[in-house]
Length: 314
Image (cartoon, rainbow, N blue to C red):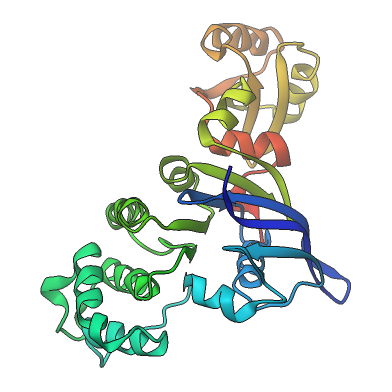
């Protein structure tokens, strides 16, 4: 397979803290590849090293065949970047933003106008191109930032939490644009996210990252198939007593506690709910609520880390 990004044991340390720890990554060309993990997992640090913004402490990485340490200029010419924080000037129009970046990236004058039109069409901002950015919605601003990263025909587009802070409908619209540009531009998209649904719906392959390390990488469907487990979430009046007794049940693969909820990983959960309710009754434990969920990426994350993704801190 043709990999456009490859890392070998890439590591970033700050004094006694290791932000990225011996990460090995292979990103297929023209794919949408997601790095999924909580805040503080090392996702942004990893992207920053691949973009040549940060220098790795050890290990190596190549982007579009260029070494990030030996050929930083060629790497930067091969990529577009959209980071979490907004970097737009409200007193410029959308078109002016694209013109400025086209000039910065050396897009030739004779193709610049047509390229800007192509990008405006791709991000569906043609009708708003000559309006000031301060009049744009959050979703429009995000699309403009993505378009700006595309202006010089990069081979790889890095998106760091591309839909952070957007409402659900706008988020889904951004997903549609990302998929569209992936196909229309023959571009590889490497994105970070902590949204499970985003990784599941958008990415061809997902790397689960936690505490600076890649724990598992595969397609979303394979990750869920491998889990072979449903999640039963139960809330009871005697949590500690229930857990103590439930740990003896051989059909429970794993059991976790999240605040007032007890999460149990099982196979064929729909057949086990009556058994679990009867088990609680026999132990004089009141079941307040119980629900079944088939595997999703959050279950995969919990199975490998023992915690929900939202619990990750800075």
